[in-house]
Image 1 (tube, rainbow over the protein chains, first blue to last red):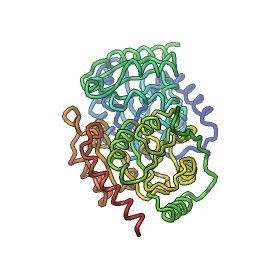
Image 2: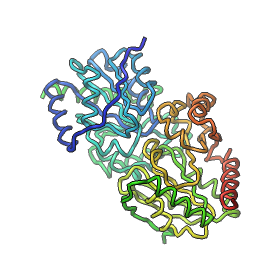
Image 3: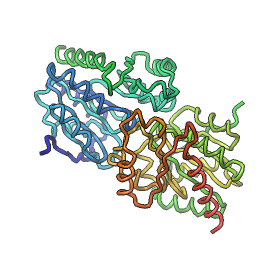
Image 4: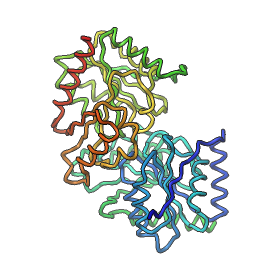
Length: 223
Length: 223
């Protein structure tokens, strides 16, 4: 038996996404729900990173997860095994989520009563960067096999994120990836970004990310 | 001194992209130019694969390359070192190329007189699949670190390609990637697709791709 819903998201009718995003953030503030928007290329390790992070936080926070994909429910299935609330969102071919689509997801998830909701956005470094989902913070994952030149090619994505996880550091010896060059390129675009090297497969570095997420959630709920 | 131009592409004004794509293919037929549209996620290895392929074909075919990116010219610089004609296209934030944008690129490249032009599309598994560029054939690269579940999540991309290169097979032992499961998923979507496992870093498998490309080019020019 499936432990999660699959929701077909409808295209938004609102012209001003930024306004809808601000309204959603106000509502989340009132409901004391911290929403994180997690973005990356396809296959950078969003779901594995989430699984590890949930393991560290699920006894401290009530967590919900929204898995957005063009098709399939493999990620919702994986997340459902952690025991947290999860919903699979199907975007109907759409390459990103905007604030209204995120709101549809939160309603489908029945997010009330959670402390932290994580939106796993569509795997894409271009379009999701252009649409404010209404999240409180944005995080992204760049994986070592993708290369250290990605901040040069997709600057907007790196500019709008609060945290960058550099994932798959265990395979660094097999790839030509210069971590310092990557960090220099990212901080030039975004001086305030927090960079955390991680290996979601082994769990290395995930504690630092989980601590950041816990503190941000508590701050959001208290102020 | 730079050996290549950087062209800022303009947004298309045509409503019917499919019609523009057909018109462009007719023109390419007349000019005896074979256009390949190469797509993948960011960092799957498009440029390295191209460099290897060009090494094998540059004495047999007159080749041109169009490198499309949101920003930077790192790929055009890499390709220019092979000695073939190359242009860097900047999409101004746009997540894909359509037929009119491809035509602008061909004009900027001054493609007349070439046998084979390769368009390296924006790194993205969603949007480029939705727009016919006017290419004669479509190829895509899926890299091992991205995972064998990608055909489930991005089915349209795998459905519209004539060739799939499974790249970075040298790191297969470090990733949980089932090649046969991947091939089964892809051929279920697209029974006629040709799948070639390659390692662009070492050159393994590239000869088979280069042979396919050479034969397709010659067939296109002769019929």
